[in-house]
Image (cartoon, rainbow, N blue to C red; front, side):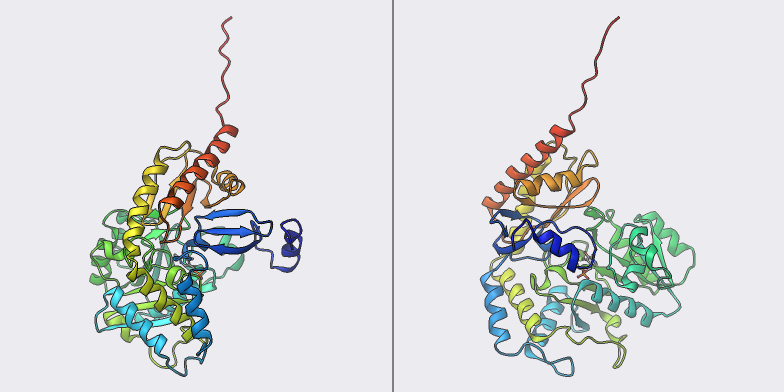
Length: 404
Ligand SMILES: *Cc1c(COP(=O)(O)O)cnc(C)c1O
């Protein structure tokens, strides 16, 4: 199949959920190739998933070795790979002894687990999420994702969920109102909202108020976790411990896997019969996650994430149409000075660069943790060219000053 005829097949056979941008057939490092042999620099990384880039030998060898040993047995059984992953996640998250891990298959499933954790904590309390949040598309996670286009066709949604403006003032008002709150669920950086960080001090204040009011603080680190921000988890920049974090995206660098990690008393809320998953944390997925974590540690990739972030942000800042940068590590939002993100994305793809436009006026990049000077330079060159292509279309119309 070539680039010419795949689109018809895709629109006939795949559920109609929005355009697919190219027919990709191969990847290596930070590059992918389409069916016509066109090469792209991939700075979307499968939406912040491909932490080691494409076809990384550690990934490929681990999948092959574990698939040839034991790939799935159900959660009626434990496997060494699963136990090792649970221990690693507890250690990286700093839960201490009293932490537990639930392994799932996606970010959404991890968040469903967190919603059930909140119900087990206090069935009569509200679950609070933030305006602009994205927690997933299943009916439970969707109730915490207040975007009309996503929610309206599926009402009625899960009851007992309310949304809050992402400000410290709104947070303080909520807890001053005397409402009974079971859990506050927030992303440290809202990825789908255009890579919007929480206000400074938000998580510390949220920790104080949830603790004082016996509510859980649950952090959706599906996008920000597993090293994406240059720390293993974004909350570790804030000097707090949450009651639970949810993980997925980068955790196995492209192998489907999700997780919820609990801290302290929240670790004792689930009991036999209350939850499980057939595939979740099978030895194949767990082995890949273990190998990915080990590779990040062995190569010092978190330091590379921080260094490349600084390089990219400095390089992007002075380009046309760019209104700054935000985010952390290699989760970077590039706000534009005009609502032309879709055009910039398209111009970038035409020049061989994959980026993402989560909103009308922001570009998101989330490249592999393994990028080096060459990838940073290639990105800056292609992105600058794409921005010039778009600003040429949007040149201010010269006003004719005529004097009578
Ligand atoms: C991607 C994402 C999800 C959903 O994860 P899936 O693996 O697509 O189910 C949930 N929360 C956040 C913050 C995400 O970025």
